[in-house]
Length: 525
Image 1 (cartoon, rainbow, N blue to C red):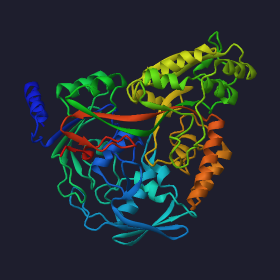
Image 2: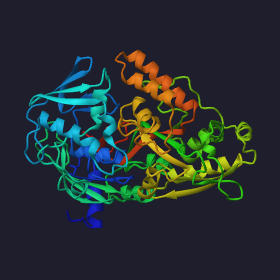
Image 3: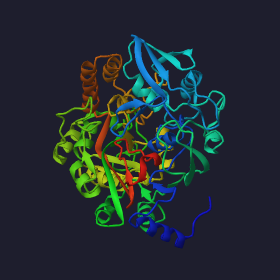
Image 4: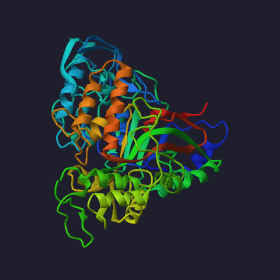
């Protein structure tokens, strides 16, 4: 698609701001996080899922408030303790004209856990399924190992593929656009890795037809550049509004904000995998330690107690986050309603370090991305200063996301800042992915970067996943969460608020799961 010259862009922008103007049929939007793959089963990452949700469809889906709703499945119900039956929507076609049937469902479920070199597998969402039974072209049954109440939730994470088109697919073929063929509201016309994806509307889409004939989905990871692109009229819509720009944008009559309380936890993962010296911990002279201090819960508690979460929210996030010492907002299903965020206590942290055998502290490097989460580089700088005050002399290293996440996935780091978006709005997602003992057979711990393991928590989680009664399951999830948080399996920092900005004349349905999708944006009535 040819790029409009800047003068034409400015003119178009001015016209769109005029009262009663008819908007163009092309949407230009910019996101702050890079998309790592168009393969919907390769890398469980929010930007990837947002893009996949424009191209593909799942059997169930989440609405803007993380409630499960119908998509490719018309209905679902348990027909036995260990069997769920799904009725599929008739008349659905892939972008290439192939019919969507129960055979495609069975094919997709089999493919998910086999994707090679996946840095964060979607297999966690299919592990409960022991067998897929194709009853007829529009009916499929999932046989599970005992009762499994979360299947409709899990299947909202799995985008359906075409058993004919996607037989033996390579992730590279999705990224090239050749196999980026789904049933979704848009189809890919061009993809430049890490830069831009261009879409055309799927006019045969079964659901609400998007307003936009074409979408330019740009990745602008620099905060200042993203805001400048909106204000210049180069783009119509941005996500991850920099906190430093919120006040300015609120007062600018050319733009408006869209906001929602989020479900993304920003936290620190620690190296639990090594008994002996961790790669980025040393004594105060720079010599390797005989044992890994992060294996001692007293050290982990000290590191957590040293963090002034409210100060990070106020000074770094400028109010765009909720300080947290748990996985979800306290009002969410399975969250701990009475778990409070206490004040930082440097003196108590020093006492714990001394009890653990580190009265003089030690040295550590805190790693994190510098282009993935809101203010990520500033957050690790702030935490580094807070840890240094208790005697844990902290060097800070921020890296581009692609470099950082590869190192984190290989367990090369000692302490790292990471985020997790819980699109389902309940704690089984972070418990299974971030804290459950790493187990490829079960699909647990796929994003457990520090390889934390707590058998007691695993047992509570396992019991919750087999409990159909909602009240009992919620109680078990709270017990599992309490075990992991008391043991400081990870160190929660805050839960992000989701803030988007757009030119006047648009409206946007803000989502708790922070996904930025073109189908959620329309001209204002």
